[in-house]
Length: 173
Image (cartoon, rainbow, N blue to C red; front, side):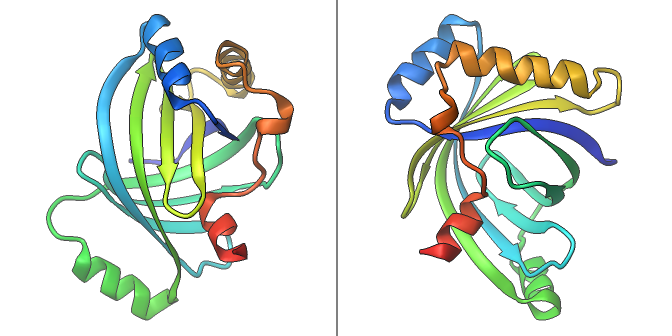
């Protein structure tokens, strides 16, 4: 897959059941619960991770700012098939492993907007909103509008927003 644009937020969420109910009432398509391990590699110009899950299985590179607002990310991702342990070994030898993130992730979609309800080992529970423009036809302004709309729908307050990735948070522990 070529690079695409995301506008996204990550926020603390003390009530995943309420968030789940709001998403379902809004017509979200539940894709399932993925048990994921994200292995982050040392990367000087962004974040490189190997995601191993029962639903999502991919190699992802992205660059984004650390801010507590809806933020744009340039994302390059390739879907993988088969066993990733050989790939993980190659990437670890080349770049070194930074951190591994283990989580149970509920995945939902409403049109081009993806929602994650996450229970992250060692960190707690979170909600993520990713407004995704795969082919460049939506644009950053509309993605920001969508992200803000769903933040309001899910009653995400500015004080709930996180600036950093789960990997950064785990590293600081």
